[in-house]
Image 1 (spheres, rainbow, N blue to C red):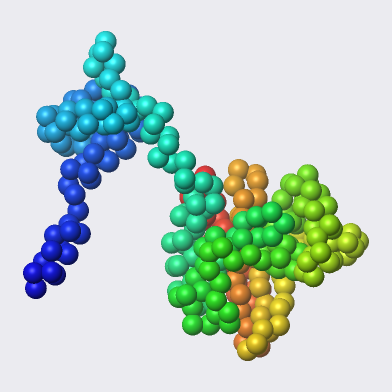
Image 2: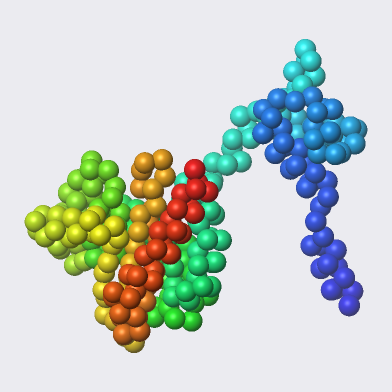
Length: 261
């Protein structure tokens, strides 16, 4: 009982830290503010706000202008976000949308981005899906030309990027990249993908053949990622899958695009 009580005490939120983060967040939003402004905005006592700001100043995260006693963030604040790169932001934004749609359609969903000459899964719902034929997680790599994700990305990314990727794939010795040596076939695949608006691929699995559908996620005119759904080919006919899943994937991509924008 004593140990349980100690654990509860150890996991109790640190109120002062929470207040400090609130002050730093608000100051970062305002860019420059006086103590009274911050105290009023956060409904904190002026003395508490002053102690928090001075603690942040001594730690190097804010500075005080001696002419008017206003505080502003320093460049040190930017260091807090350096580890939160574009892929991490995509995962963070996409996660709740993937979870919600995954609960609705049950089949596993994922968001993937290019990583060299492959596509890398950044977030997936495989662990919450009882229908996943094989379990993928963040970090799984998918072949660029043999996967729906890679085809959707290549078909919709910028021409210069597509050319560079195809040149690199043509030099690859990986079996899944062999088709890159046949530019006519590659152009046929990508042209078909572009005209239909989604990537499509089939792969043999131990339990059942699997089909994947993928749609691009554009942000400010540039494709940043793709969203995918995988399902057993024997359970959902391709035409039915396209009718069911493509509109939902399109809505998913729009939701992620909206939140990123």
